[in-house]
Image: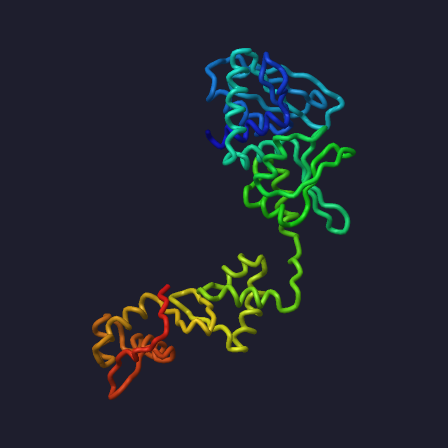
Amino acid sequence: MDKDLARCVGLWLAEGDTKTVAEITFTNSSFELVDLFYRKLQSLFETDNYRLYVYRPREDADYRELENAETSLYNDERATQTYYIIRLASRDIVKEWKHKVSKVKDEPNLYPYILQGFFAGEGSVYEGSRKSRTLRVSQGERDDFIEKVFDHLNLDYYFRPEGRSYVITKKKNWDIFDEHEICKLHPRKQEKFQSIYNSFQEEHYLKGELKKNVYEKLTEPYRTKELAELFDRSQARLCDVLMELKKEEKATNYKAGGPTYWIRDDQNAVIISEVKNEYLDLLKDQRLKVGEISEHFSVVKSSAYKNLHRLQDMGLIKKKDHEWTTTGTEKQVIVL
């Protein structure tokens, strides 16, 4: 089963005629969605029996056509924008199509893509006063399959009969929508979703809770950027927390190559780059002068000195009688 088929199943479940046995239809004002649905049908069924109906709010309104589909133009004065209906008439193909729909609905791994299509057809993104943020899915009445999709994706939701829609709030649910790109098929909805999603203010942590959570995570090396993404905070906020831990002698940062990594002091570990690890390997079980070391690595003495003194500061090597060797420290050496 392919993702585009699942998306088109979602589109059809949202805005197609699922009851007829004589034709497959899909209605939408987004030509891109109509084109996606049309191209998928073309790839599935060998027929040229397609018809595109175009409804314009006025005669001079712009519209587009589908290649190899017969087009019929109509005026709809009640419409606020041009909308399209793609139609494929064939009882045999409808049977085959509905069989494919049933197979897709039985594949939970395709549920995110079904919801992408369904939301493109029946979804809406809303931001009200006082920063209330809501995702809605229009439905005249509750739908067992749509709720099955929501449950599979761990979405919290409730149905409002008076609003004829499912209502989804909370940042946790917006995170799920973002992770699975639920709004991606409809450009206007995606743009609005991203704008509102980016405006979420940082969730409140109890005093000291963020620092406690970061400290618990630092049993392994992390970059500031990685921690910021993990805790959904800005890098500046994480930098403040990490500096507090450093002042309290609970965490230390190490530069390994380009990036800087943080780890808890009680892990008795140091983090070094692959280059510095080569210096360690060279100095195991032997004493060498800086000239010999620089010659071995084909670098100038100043470059060798820089790496040697950094390793000395970490307690990994020592210098005696102008010669360098390892200290035999019990510290855990992490190479990144």
